[in-house]
Image (cartoon, rainbow, N blue to C red; front, side):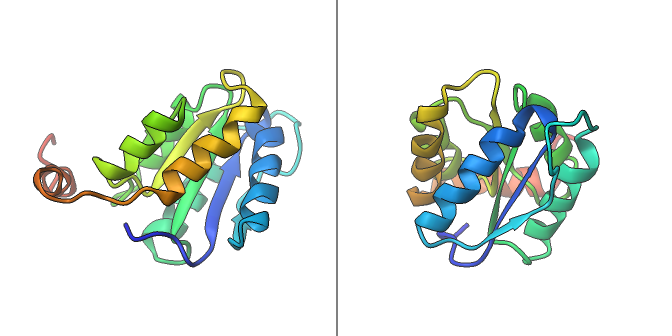
Length: 151
């Protein structure tokens, strides 16, 4: 994945809503355009439809990358990874975010609002956005994932 120049997809359930809104502001401040796939409040919702919409937008090329959020980020990553062509990594610090891009070419990341301090979230997002896929030995692994090597 090249560095994003087009829209960044964002989506969350109720448990990730506040951080989603914070991330949208940070992305816009950094000059990124944002496409919000919901939810639009902290009212309890099921996350799969919101996450699936964001993931599909990334795989269709409508958005360059995506950030999905929930309480832990785990369910959101699982939902996103059900979409063919998505490589969504749960990130918990800048190192995990950087490596998600450098080694796994993650085109989405998942963050857990209940597990991350708010002041660290922009740093995590920035680390992922600014990292570049290293290719090399990692490319073969990405190809194996895309071929469905584990199915």
